Length: 360
Image (tube, rainbow, N blue to C red; front, side):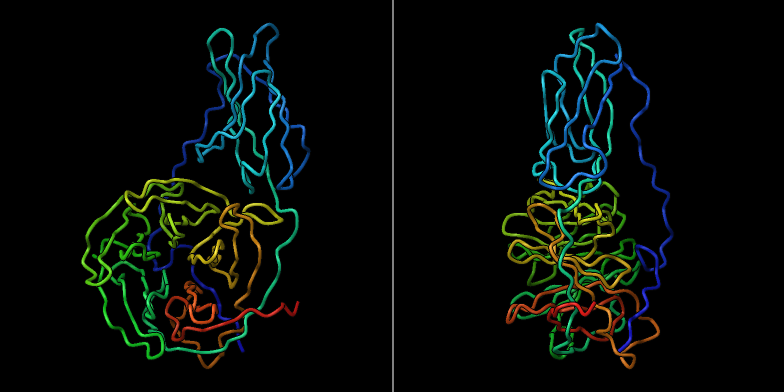
């Protein structure tokens, strides 16, 4: 068996990279200065408490209240009236977090400071290999961005400008039963099915398209607002859609208007796990492939902690490789037995696999 080479940079399809401008907080102080001391030294273990001491940088200026929120998460995680801050990591979540500390002064003025804290999992996740139990045909021209099983059929979303589409196909034969192409202006990304509607992310256009599941007619569209301004993977639980944007973030989204209900960071014993891509949800666990690698992670959907690592190395035989083969990028679940179905961009096969203990 042979490990398939992962060749292309993030985004694939040869699209030109865009320079992203990020507005960073100003280092200047518009009000009285504050000092913030983090008592925890080094990394913090998830489950522990972060202790901060906030005080005025100038004697005689009285602080009357302090609040702490996660930058880009818009989520308050602690507050105090005396400057002594305790942040429960069970509430903040894990990963490489940036906190905004805001102090209110008796004078009515405010002042902000920012602190970065790395919160890691208390132990390393389990490690697993895959055993191939079946192979099914797959179009070698499908630049797979999303994959799922619904009512016994495979649904797939593909990418590239001018080649993006959604498809319904037969798993066993590989026959395409229905398809709908996107306009050449859009690069298709992850898909999911919720309430008899098919949702499709796009890469950099900020658009989400919604289709009637039976006819594939477009019935709605929304705008997404993710930190990277990119749409990657998509799945759902019982109440929310779940999306990735190529960072370590997962967004829990209202299906009715695509507003963000919650956001968590994916993390392991080393901190944030970046390049989280195609997603699949089952029983409180989100399975995600890490873009440009053979790694698939199982993520606790409540906390973002990585529970298990899987490697797809060795599932592709040399005789199954093709010239246009790109990276792994498709995860679905066989509802009949719980096995994973794995494919990739321009792969000729969908592999049904089951986990086995890692040989390493």
